Every structure is written in C-alpha cells, then in structure tokens.
Length: 153
Image (cartoon, helix red, strand yellow):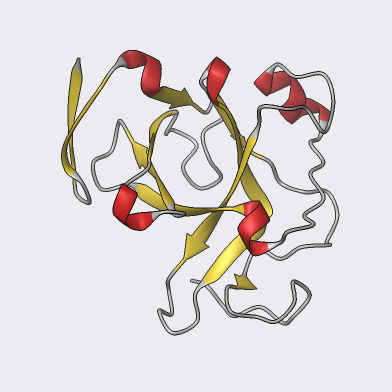
C-alpha cells in the first residue's frame, strides 16, 4: 500500500494499480504523469484527479455527459494510440471535464479538452478537440453548450 499527503484529501492510501498514468502529462502540467481518480461519496457525481507527485495539484472533474448529454466523443488517432484503443467511440472510456472555479459565481467546464481515461489500462489523456464545437470555458449553468463562455484565469 502506498501513501501520499495531499492538500485537499489529507493522507491518501492507495495501491499502485489505482494510479492513472498520463504519458504526456496535461497541458500546463507536462511533468505530471501519475494521478489518482478520487471519488468521494459526498461529492457524487464530481470526481477529483489528484497528482501523486505534487500534493497541491488536484482537479475537480464532472462526467462530460452530465454537462453535454449529446457530446460528440471523437478521439484523435494519437490519443487512441496512447490509450491503446482502435476506434474513436471505443467502449470502456471515461470522459471527464475539468471544472474551473476562478470566478466561483460563474464556474466553467473545459469541454474542448476533456480527460479521457481507460481505467482497465490505467491510462489517460487530455484530448484536445480539433474543432471549435465546444468551449474550454463552458459555463456550468448555461442553458445551452453554445453560449458565450465566462473567463477562467
């Protein structure tokens, strides 16, 4: 059993098999490769991506289908190769949007670059879309996915 100290969750015990590896890191955090996906019962449906390497680094996540029920799940070829899947719509992938609370009264979600996790392989990528159909700053409380985004700094 491994142990890490985190800013958000305190002491976290986990097994090596629970780590999700992001081979390319995340944009802005390219040196961060190992994370835990934490699901606290009190926070459902939200999840947390906690860095194993940096105690203060964690992201709040929400299932993409909760934010955009008809989200177009297209994975670029390179992301499919990283995850070890053959088709764009492969089963067994978890699609999660990073939430931003820079302005707590106007939280946003990154639907332009969702995290795609393949738990059975313990792999993840931040899949940046090649189209402009979705926003990196989609307001959480907007009536429709196409509304003007709030700024997230």
